[in-house]
Image (cartoon, rainbow, N blue to C red):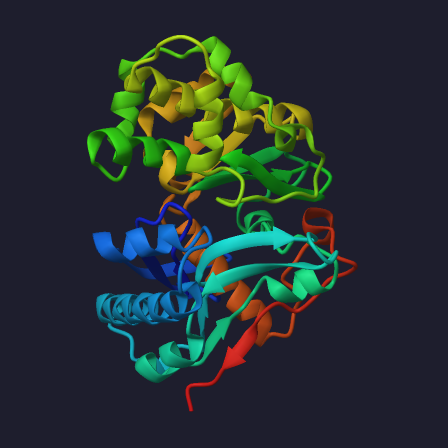
Length: 369
């Protein structure tokens, strides 16, 4: 099984995956379940992305609350598939990223995911594989993104160049080159800034379908200021998160922006920033790609998908549903795949993606008993 709760903070997705289906495919998803976060947990997880009072205590309790939802999603997924816990080899549980600062401070840095895999093993009665990032970081890597190896295995085609965009809170790109090589890195913000602006002005968790953004107009001067951040010009390997692209970052730029702007115009500009950052990354590192597959919540944003296609006229932009795996299942399936890699004692990282000193087995095991 794979569990994923991403930087969009919308809830938990779980999938039960058969990696030896009879038809010879890489995998078959036997069941999928989703549980949303309640407003208080989502707010606490968002708050823990920045320093605050009593945060060690709060983080520990938030991790316990998160894992209880994980356990519910596990039970829902098993029930949907009619599968007993004893038939599942392991759960891959990534946790909730609240800080991501690799290679900073002491040249090693860290990445923190709230999780309590021991509690999940107790509640589910299954082996749990967790803590996927730290071994890569210890080996000098970014610890992220971790999904490109899975994207290559699932979506790669011989002698075809393609790109996979995962647009959650942060957007990341996987470049599947025609020669079989793979590159991947975080492009920049995905939904995180748009969701923040939507909560602030509409009191809604996200802009459904991008309708609000579509009602506004892009502000060229503001967009230029947003695009000016050094992160966008930094070469890979690179990864980022809410440590950089957060409300404080946005507020500082808005305060320096001259002229009046409606909230809808700013939302339109934030959507354009995400589309530009993804398209710019593809233009720099996947120029030959004629197929761009999109997963994560961004694939459900009609306006964002339209803007991506406008920026990438030579490529066909479509959700991963068209390639056999629904957009809201890809990341959870990736962590099932990474859990299987751990069980098989196979490396889960790609050196060209993370910059680690070599392939490493990722994860730590929390046995069911």
